[in-house]
Image (tube, rainbow, N blue to C red; front, side):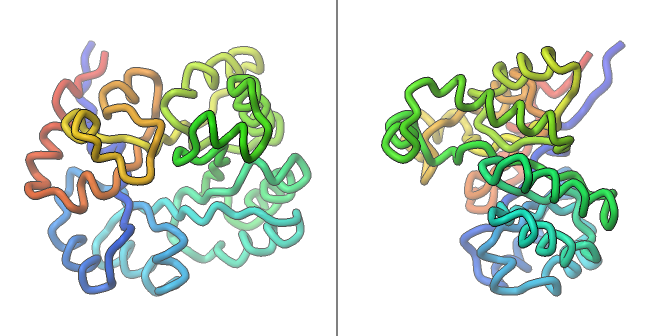
Length: 245
């Protein structure tokens, strides 16, 4: 049996690099085939909870709040709790904050906001192998990623944010622990952007169909959609071959 799932319905549009008026104009024009948006630190610091409520209430979008919280356990837990009244469905924390921080996050999440899934950020997709070696002294990147994914699994973190290149490693960890994580992948570009060098800050990238094929549950795409000359054409490209068995 074949059911049709639009890839655009599993793609979160990142509302980065735009002022407030531009953002509102974009949201007015964003087709209903794209129900998800991602609000990052830049926009949240500039416009706060008012923006989140407006996006949800006026534009009827589902929201991924990407703040990448990372501090001592008590500070992160209280920071998360301050967001409990927001109509968001995903919030990010850094897995590098450690086991105690992630456990504190889950305690707050379970007590105050169990409608929200916590996503653990592994290593930023703007970092390549050279960066990981220079910054963290990592030479075996596969093992480094698996340590973080296992940390997510043992602390009850609901999902992870990672490059699509790490999806096979996550599947290994999931199989070993008989648990499943929600997998959200940034670092996604259309084929013509990849071949043309239009990668922006990203270094580890794949196209949407490759990422979904490797097991991504959601993708995050920013300027590929927000700065598209014809966003409907891009959405059509995104949704091509979107039938799942």
